[in-house]
Length: 381
Image (cartoon, rainbow, N blue to C red; front, side):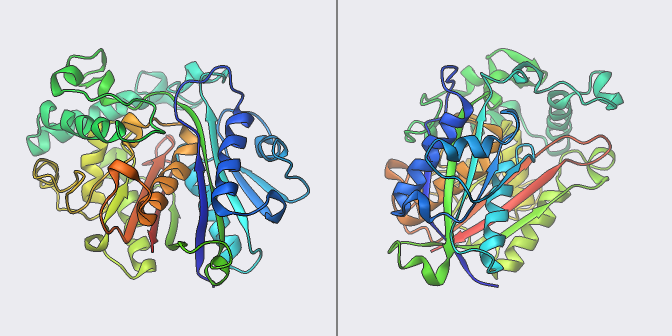
């Protein structure tokens, strides 16, 4: 197996762009990544494109827009984990020696999709969903149980959204660049008690891309390669719904496998982008990723450990809560943020001296299972 490096990343601004077609967003991100890598489009040997709602063979439309044809191109659907899956598959193709240079793209246009109003509609055969236990209701029950088990208040959970929106103000790619107070978050429109609107990630259009090569060839293109020290993808089991809906065993297992692959531990992570689809998820993921023990997650937040300037800044991009959640693009967008951090190119939100970064994304509701998929990548310079 060969070591693999990222030599270029690109992203659109995240937001609502009903005038832009999905393939146009994807092409914008791909162009930016190609330019960042200092390569020509014709250098690419293969591509993976993640998308959930854009229709068939969208990757061919994305890359065709910038003149890339006649290469192996695979389209991926893996819910919120789609973009990270594209990165994982590109990593594997290079690590195995199959190819020497490729691109992973994630793209989503929620506002132009006919599925835009059906994101929380239960799948056919999901009996509990059809009875009202849709995605948001599951998270609401999880949050209520979580608050009761660990004596956590709504004000403490809202502090996650305060932090991430503050970070998002420093990110030119963020959908929302506005600071919020705890009061504004808790007094925002009710979604499903106890979750309010500003505890939720928004619907988002956008795209991101990454260029990968073998590490021993990276010096040909850049003086700042970022190595993929670990790439792990797992699916769920039957534990979550019936045993403890406040803890993702799937994420914990995936993170442990990634730490083992990288030869590192949670104590080595300098910056993290994790899946904060709802504010309380970030606190739960602190535990699952090994940053603290159960019951200590609020203290981690309140002591400033996960703030910019803390020991493990989390969601410096603004996270899904502020940067936005363009579903299949989010996993690649996390990678882009962390590459910028490790290169020292993150501007006002830069984590000083960052050498090890972790990206985590989880997604998909499957009847009877914990969830659909989870991915953890560990990057280092």
